[in-house]
Amino acid sequence: MPRIVERVMGVLGHGVRVEVLPYESAAVPTRLHVSAERAHREGDDPRGYPHPLNVFLTWDDEEIERLMGVGGEARFLRYLDAMAAKLDAWQGARDVDLATRSQAEPAVLFGGLDFEA
Image 1 (cartoon, rainbow, N blue to C red):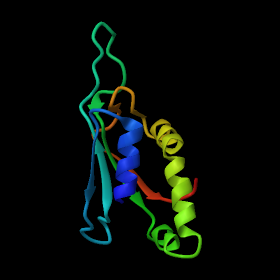
Image 2 (cartoon, one colour; image 1 turned 60 degrees about the horizontal axis):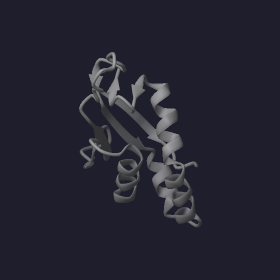
Image 3 (spheres, rainbow, N blue to C red; image 1 turned 180 degrees about the vertical axis):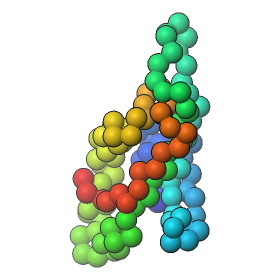
Image 4 (cartoon, rainbow, N blue to C red; image 1 turned 90 degrees about the horizontal axis):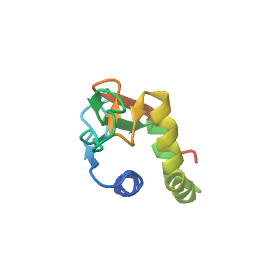
């Protein structure tokens, strides 16, 4: 998880908070919480969505177990390298705008993620 945090922060840049929320139960697994205040650009018309960035990411348990097997480290490194493209794809799927640090809903969950690059 620390390597994912580092990569997400590197991709999203200044002003974004990324924290690991610990496992609470089977219904509330370990999550990565990505949040930020809405970005306001001086002189621009308001853009983006009404809510500030508040995204939660969870990964499928079986996917995590697969990382512990043969080839898991190489697979994980490919996943980290693809993180920028993944974040871009996820935002379009759920009305999240990373550039303006905004989203359509108060909270967004990207759950059951895999480690495919």
